[in-house]
Length: 160
Ligand SMILES: CC(C)(COP(=O)(O)OP(=O)(O)OC[C@H]1O[C@@H](n2cnc3c(N)ncnc32)[C@H](O)[C@@H]1OP(=O)(O)O)[C@@H](O)C(=O)NCCC(=O)NCCS
Image 1 (cartoon, rainbow, N blue to C red):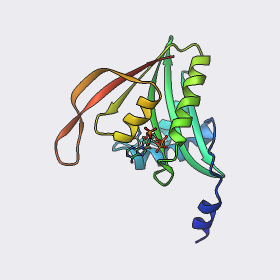
Image 2: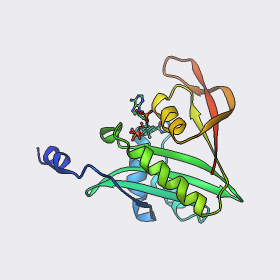
Image 3: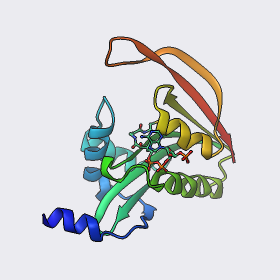
Image 4: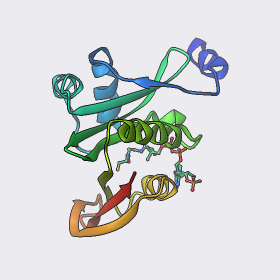
């Protein structure tokens, strides 16, 4: 009941800032519920202290709502992972977080951003399409599906 009230009164606008190692537990927990292969808290912490990794996290009030991580190499970056708390999806938080993340990467002299997305992941594909990513490659049969089949990984690119 208290949790429901807190959620009801949580601010509508997410606060998005750079993530720190103190966010490792929240990121690992959300990653675990969002992807087939989870990341341990240690793995996330290792990424967060890596100087080539850029990370943002979103909060609604005091509640952790999502994260995005990318790794830089020369003037390119790869989005490693992005996820929003399942209860907070569909209200534009990922779109705002991705936009801020891309602007920060541009500020770090990154010219091109790549990522891989499951062709069956409708919401992620819409998120990236809206942010200006276009398909530049495809790996057939890359992701296993619950029904035993597979779906392709789409390689997307956005020039900054
Ligand atoms: C993909 C994800 C990050 C999107 O987060 P979100 O905050 O819900 O995204 P937004 O609200 O900014 O919406 C982004 C787009 O997805 C669409 N969308 C949101 N939920 C959707 C759903 N269930 N089905 C289809 N499209 C959906 C939105 O309409 C929007 O598209 P539009 O701008 O054309 O209307 C979120 O669904 C998630 O965490 N998924 C699990 C992890 C994952 O798959 N990450 C991506 C790996 S590549």
